[in-house]
Amino acid sequence: MANKMVGRPRKFDDADVLHRAAQAFLQDGFEAASYEHIAAAMGLSKPSLYNAFGNKTALFERVVSEYADQAHKFIVASFSNAKSLDQAVEDLFQGAAQFYSRPEDPSIGCLLIGTALPATSQYANIRDTLTSFTLSLETSLEEVVSSRYERDAKKIGKSPTEIATHISSLIFALAVRARMGLSREQLSDIAKKLAALIH
Image 1 (tube, rainbow, N blue to C red):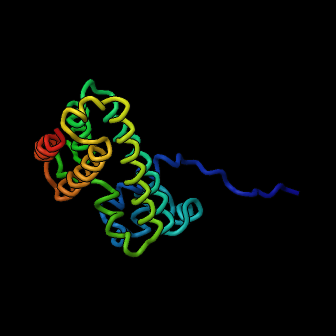
Image 2: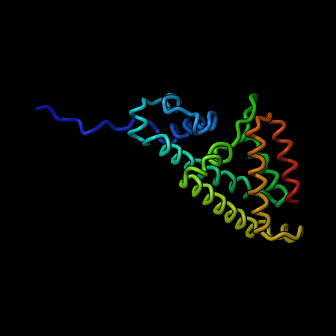
Image 3: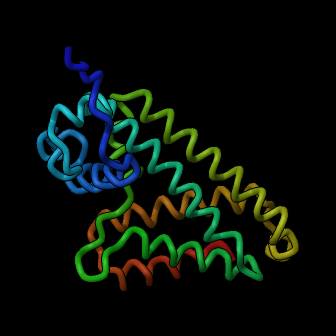
């Protein structure tokens, strides 16, 4: 009697397909992105997509959560290795401008601000993810200022908490500008001006 197959092992990398799904959601928006289009963008059949990640809402929640984790790591890393607070802020904002934009085409922006934020009124899990992301990001930035740039913070008369809040707010503002489709050069120029507000 032939052995029955219990199930096929998944033959794809979660990180890769979730990145593709994030791009599809970012391009089309949550409501407009069809399950068929997302599956095609991920290189999966609809049944495979559903079996791996659930329905579109469950997939979106997973994508937003993964994206938030990566964004947190990227922002903190970009901010942590400079010799001064001024340089750290400049590095962070220029890095964000690069991340939110594309070399030739109009900027597409940030999944959290451009796609997830409009969905928070309907989906509590998305709202909770964005709230947690913002609070944890500001805590991490505050810790970096306290440990690496405290002397510079005192020079400009701002507490680590104030600086962290200003940075996160201005990063979100940059993401909004990116969603407007600015060029990389335009976004970089705005990033420079926003960074100067922290000095």
